[in-house]
Length: 150
View 1 (cartoon, helix red, strand yellow):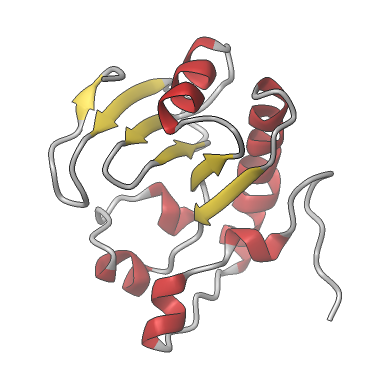
View 2: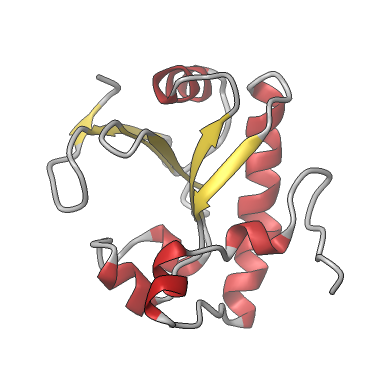
């Protein structure tokens, strides 16, 4: 089956992967609106982030989550993941702290950037509000999220 290429470096299936969905036997199928958000906001935003990070490969650990998957993983009811606006990422050759600091200082237009230290990922969302919020979550899902990078 041919992969759907969204940008130069990203394919649609990368944004739909979910170990939780696979483990639970739940389809993680986005609506047409979610697909549009991924294609028009999230994928191009991550392409810009990739460039800022020195053209290093970005691994998406979680992006779109249907509401059931989001609940199971402990995501908030208002999570940008459920709208197709957010991805949790790791970057080859960079620590999550380095990724977060670089993106936060870059001028990249994003809505939220959250350094999730316990999961060793950076959550970045491209909700159209583009508020530029930068935070840290030291614990896992449901733990406090504080302003700034720590």
